[in-house]
View 1 (cartoon, rainbow, N blue to C red):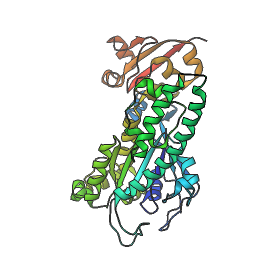
View 2 (tube, one colour):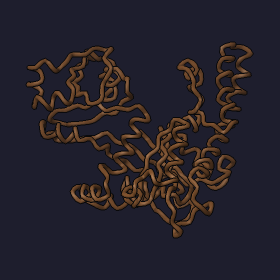
View 3 (cartoon, one colour):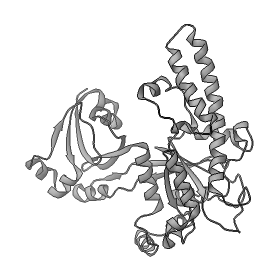
View 4 (cartoon, one colour):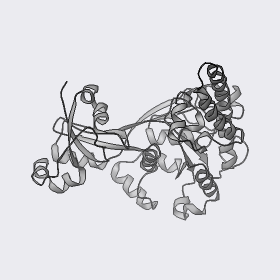
Length: 364
């Protein structure tokens, strides 16, 4: 999973990226500090792996990973090539989802590119640039479909869907706000729109907002209401807190979070929100060589899940031996789980569940 972190200059975007990835991307109090996208790979926290490691004593523990891409700050006119617009748009096309960092704190020492803090204006600035870029994409795609329709009448249905999206964009709405049927989505799979990518608005709040009560932050509340209107996610997070957490060991981190009145770090919450937004789950494999988490889309069937490990597993799939994580932990061992009849033999139509511990049987 690749998540692109975007936002206007000086909203805390690179500070947040540095904190959650410890990648050391440069951060400074001026626009365009980030030019080429910095990439950081982060392990997905999963306590289940540690429990399984206690049971199997594996040689290696391999968590699922997320790539965070810190994309250059954007200004008005990016869709026309202003600032670093062309590079911004090309980088954002490559990510699975967008983490849109929005400034929700006031600090006279940190310059805002537009002079004052207004998160909805900031969101609008970036969203409009993405909309303008998508309108250009749609116009080209409609032209191609119109030409193709002279010899292929099925293209008329494609044109209808494209025009539906274009109409919404012209009204200032994102493509993801347009409800399409599965058949309509299938017609335009080759039309990649920036505003159709899932979004989490990361509301960057002040350090003391969590102790005061996050709902007392008027900026955060406005972002939350906006996100609800377009079916996007929203997450309050403090880049400064994450920066401080990144310097602590696990024990000190736990104490620090408790002092702040938080149960988990912003990174952990961001990862969970991203998995939910993209409809992702993890299944697990366990043995003495390795305990590992594998990320799949919710609804994936067993053969396709096996293919995540190796294409031969999917091609020669016979069956999957499956036990639920909670059942295995309660039994204390795989042999005990088998004795209780909790290890199931599942076929090609089995839909994987989060936390399934699986051994795939295959023959090529």
